[in-house]
Amino acid sequence: MNGATIIATALDVKFGNNKLFILPIESTRSPASGRAARYWSAIVAHVKTLVVHSHPLEESYSAALRDMVCEGLTASDVDHTLESLDHGDEPHLGGGSVEHLIAVCPTWWGGPPAIMLDWLQRQLAPFVDAHSPPASSPLRSVRRLSVVTTHGSSLLINRLQGQPGMQTWQRVVVPLCHPDAEFDWISYYKIDRSTAEERAAFLTKVRATFTTVPVPA
Image: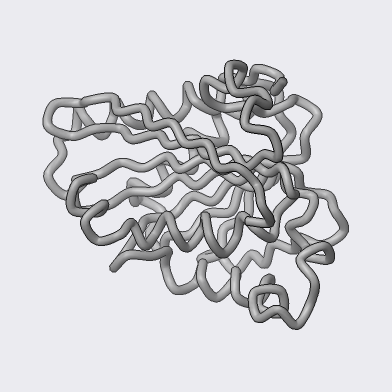
């Protein structure tokens, strides 16, 4: 990633036999830059934040995650815009107005839903194919990319598969963001074998995550 240093820290929080897996990954030009200050989320109240959601069912768990993200942002007085791809919304990233992009969607068959992939392709294809320079990417103003997602499989199985869902965002999307952009992967694994109490606990955790707004160093 343009010679940048990748620093990864994993936090495993167990809920019964399931776990909340939070993986903040920061891409920075200095290995020591802000490492101690970024325990988790860093959203500045004045940052322009875009939440993009994708799931065909409004009563889905993904929709509940979306609501928790927005509730957390609202509780932190973070101005944000919500766009739902399955409702026909068409988020536009150009103009340098988005500094924090939050994608909320399930991970199906190792990747985001088709409608999310289609939106990303339409926004980023010229830059992924190297026909256009990354410096002119519509994501260039994005200093933080957060993905909130779910998996039917366990974290172990997902790691053995190479974590294709996370790799899509980390290797394709993040390089087109700001050179110092940070990447947050917030995933709930083994959701197919979870209990109502465990799913509720994860929702609470997600809301708290986006309510935490320390200023990044």
